[in-house]
Image (cartoon, rainbow, N blue to C red):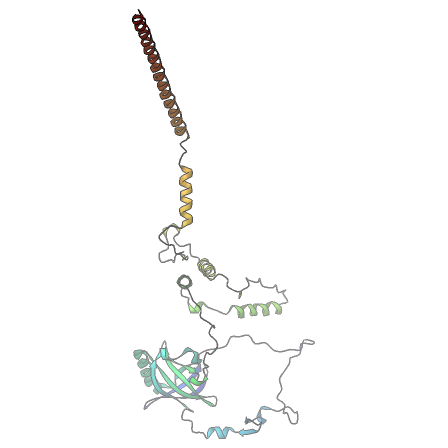
Length: 359
């Protein structure tokens, strides 16, 4: 790999000659602007605003535009005379835990290569010290005409440096968070956890740029004169989530299908699989009034009506009443007969006694 900067790491009184090598590369596909009428390439030419003539690179310098529009020329010699101790040195200023570095500050990444045989020993010393301390080094360095902030850490057996933005270059997230108080229920959090567990981890080396591959296939097809078929459009995303619980549940199921997992609990297999989480409706210990009414009505319907018993009881009562009435009638009749008979004999006796007296 070609180095883009040569210098040294200043580690206290230790100086480590190094070369700076790009650790990343851009694989984006770049397009040219063309004239649609004839396909001619559109180029940007550097033209002076005063004489409207094209200017070559050797005739172009630097200048700072003041607030009133005045141009203040700045030459390379002016910049070279500035007191910049990090012009050729990566100066380590501190060693801190890695979690103290805000990922928002991360910028470009570089590999630091030991420059020459004498640099191998101090280079290895710094690398092993970083490994054992579980810390990263914060450093200052100058690159492309400006001083920058960097972080040194170990990647495999190499010291890597990440360019960092200065703290005052990070914007405060004002007005970015959702407005108002938003409440998230435990059931929603449980489903979110289930979705995270279902998606699980991923091998970072397996990730690739699908869009770039599609563009490359498009270019190859057009270059060979083939007809390009439009890609099948997937489901439209970005819509409003009406039911968050349903959306989370569907996401869990979709993630399981995409990973080829079976439904949780199927055939008693799949140790460690997450079961579907559903919100549980809270119910009180006492049955509701509506349920009590329903159970009472059902009990009434299930109880047979004692129709025959009522009829037999009334018949019995009627028979008993008629019998008692007959008895009373017979008793009264017998009493009348007895009275009439006793009354007649008494009359006869009185008449005979009257006849004896008159004689």
